[in-house]
Image (cartoon, rainbow, N blue to C red):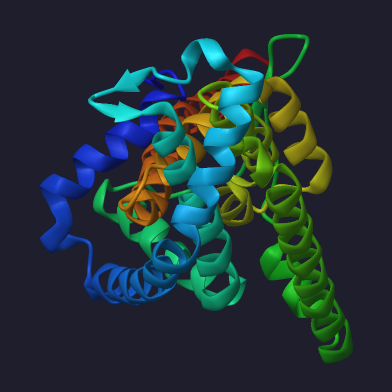
Length: 288
């Protein structure tokens, strides 16, 4: 059974706490790298800019939102909370740049696949129900394509994938930097920031899953259009967790785990569809 999409980032946290010793050394290495980069980044940010940024945020609140200027949440003023969210946003941006997209992609890929393997999920070809009620299953193309493609074509395909990844990374970083000042606005600002950036990351949550299923570009677009609201809510929840002060970088890994668990539940449904297609195919000669 597939659960509501916003639940999977939380399920990822629970799953990690219960299976941390079984997820393999790649998680520990990735976490150590992320922790080291985050600490080395956030320490100077807090020491050099927190007081200055807090002064600016307080000034903005005093003039624009005087009614909540003295509001406290858990004993901490709204301006301090807003400054912490802003600082964490800056830290996340710097950590992403320093660690690099390739490093994060490879580590999260291993973690994603480890979770699928631990749950006994074998990803198969994409299956869908047509308008006439019949199940259709796309055929894997990697083996035949690999035999036909020349080394030059394979190299060109790899270059194109790298260019697409770089373009996506640049767009995400650009959007992040443009929306980062929203965190100056108490409460509503961080929520808007999470919605904008979470919506942008939604279509890429299951890129590895789609790659493993060898789905075509058209199949991916159709799938994402059909499940747009689910990917948006997952992305917003995941972005909100990663923005939490001091611990947000850890949730980058648990969000990957949550996405893998979501893919596992989806693949079980896909398995049922493929099994139904097999039964339809087997029954057709008998009825003919």
